[in-house]
Length: 181
Image (tube, rainbow, N blue to C red; front, top):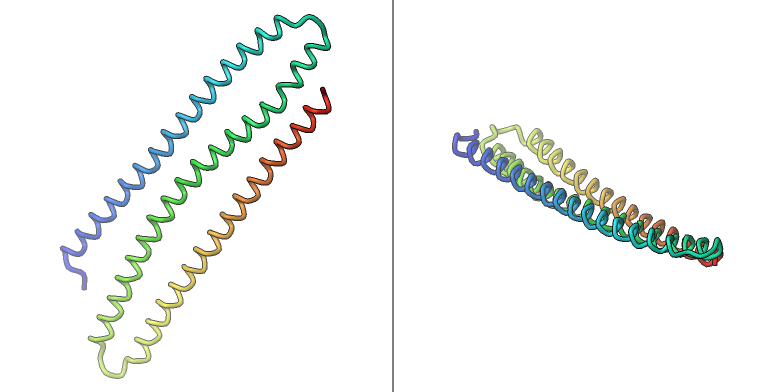
């Protein structure tokens, strides 16, 4: 049976976890805003520089060369921006996962403690029911760990695919840029 102190301690821990997650989420939003401000400043500066360069163009050939020279840097900057976005999201997700894993581990230990406590206080002849309960808890823990491993593998695969696509896009822009020159 849970005491009032245990319930209050549990609520306090849950509130602290919620505030911690909220803080981490806010940090992610701050990083996203900072990234967008930097990207916007850079885009404005590059647009101004490009407009000045276009004003100085003397013929169509020079204009085409100027435009072709923009393709590759734009693709690289877009890939870098996407990479930063992915890194911010991955860091926030990792923090969330870490917190949830800690909470789950704590909850698993508490459940096992309750099962052990119930086992000690169980009436004679209930050994089979207790064994079934322990087996169910162990199976649930194993299932959760398997799920965590599957999510980690999927996350790693998604990151690998993201890196491959980004590298392919940059390389394709280099090829297109080289052909236009």
